[in-house]
Length: 334
Image (cartoon, rainbow, N blue to C red; front, side):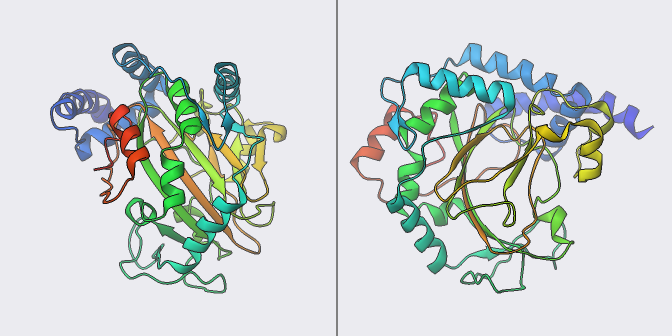
């Protein structure tokens, strides 16, 4: 009975939410819940349909300069990268972050106080108090920096405004992309109760209609210290048997996917991965060591989950110019 009520009510809640969003640029909670329900109900077809509309109404930027941390990308290079993501759901770049970038971000993360995943709170919530990260701590499996905290670091600003990353996002999303998230977190070994809340069980992300994430390994990541795990091509359609908005155990994944398609994306420090996390993925629970991961996300619309605005005091002339040139892309940086 509840399911029938949802089928009747949620499409209207979703459509009303879209209309409200077009006026206010905000999404109501019920509209967001309805959106996630419809994603499951249609196996992602509602997202594909609306993304096509967005691409038609708001064509992608014409970018002449795609030089950045991924190299000086030609249009052919970008098309090759995007084709790989469209086929497999991810792309592991040959190019890595320069050592200066790695050192600066690692130093920042080691010396800046950070919030931690708090198991004393319901759902997924982070502590109000902050601590200096200690890999020998038994406090939490995950210590996370916010958008605003990260924006204090100049290397992070360079990555946020990087032309090569932006060009890939622009082409993959097929519309003027919006930077909606910059986040970084430490992960350490913990007991089994960390699996769900710390995103260490397979799941799909569904905060927006369409999005692309760039992951940066700031330290070496092997099979023992938490590689990003991804089910190849699962960003397209999911088997009905596991098409639910929940965390999924490995045993269930193994029933429906060949082992060769369940990947551990290991890499040395500085490794860069582009991932469509609409596909099934998880962070593998750490057995030893630590992992520091920085992430950027670009999307085709801000409809969906709540988002935060970054207050920028000093962008510098180059970043100000980029923000002015790509107003839609960097609208959350004020």
